[in-house]
Image (cartoon, rainbow, N blue to C red):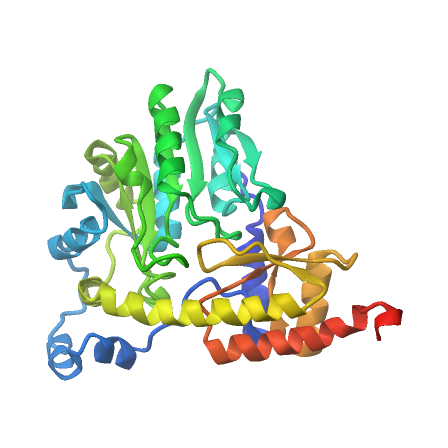
Length: 377
C-alpha cells in the first residue's frame, strides 16, 4: 500500500506555526478550558468533579452517555449506531478501510478532503470524480451520477459542508442523492465534520444519515464545536457496520482518554451555548469578508452557506507560490488551492478570531496592491 502525500495537512504542518495571521484555519477559534466551563456555567463544580476523574482508559467503546449525546444529533439514531474515534480523520480512516476493497469503484463529488480519495486509491479502488464548478457556485451536478455508475460501483462519497468550498447540500439534494444510492444499492459515505453552523439560519443542519439506511457519516467536535484538542470524532452508521468498526478499533486506537470523554459530554450537553458563541463569530466574520471582497479588485468569492470559503484571485501566479510569498513577506497564511487540485484559489476560514481576520485581510489587501495595473496606481 502506497499513500500519496497528504497535501493540505503537509502544508499546514510545514507553515502554520510560522505565521502572524492564520486566515486559513477551518476550526472555530478554539475554546480554552476556562471559556468552556464558564460558557457551560459549571466551572467550580465541574473542576471538583474533574479532579476525581481517574486517568485510565475509560470505556473502550466510549461511555454510554457520550454515545447517547452523539446519537441525539441525528433524528433516528441509537447509541449502538455510534463508534468513537480520535477525531473525524480517524473515523474516516476506519470506515474506508472497512468499507473499501481492491477493485471497488467509488463516485466522488470534488473538490473533496484528500483523505477520502487517497485512502481508497491506496487500497486499489477506482474513483470517478464529478467536479463541482465555481461557475455553478460549487453546486454538485447530481444529474451526472448515472453516467458515472459502473458495474462495480460500491460507494458514493462526499463531504458536507464541503472542504474547501463551504458548499452546503440542501435537503432536496440530500434526498435525491440518497434516492440514487438506494436505487443502485450503494453505500453512501459522507464526512460531516463541518456540520452544525449555517449562514442562513441557526439550525444544526440536516445529516445524510437521516435520509438513507446504508449511510455512514463521520463527525467530531473539532470544527463547529471549537474543541479540536479533545480529538473527539465518531461514525454514525448501521449497527451491523458499527459492529465491524468496534472490532477494527482495537487495531487503531483502543480507547479515548476518560477525561476527553467527560469533557465531550459536557460540550454536547451544552451544544446550544457553544453553537451560539460560534455563530456570532461566523456572522461577524462573514460581514467582514463580504465588505473586504467587495472592495478588493483581485479577489472573487462564491459565498456558500457554510463558514469555509474558497476564494479566487486574478493574478497569474500558482497558488502555492503566492501563499509562500505572502506568508514570507507579511505573515499572512493560507492553504493554497493546489492542495485541493484547483489552482489560483486560497482557502479562507470563517471561524477565525474576528480581530485577527480583519487585520489579516487588511494586510493581505495592502500586499495585493503591487499587482494593480499601472494605470490604476
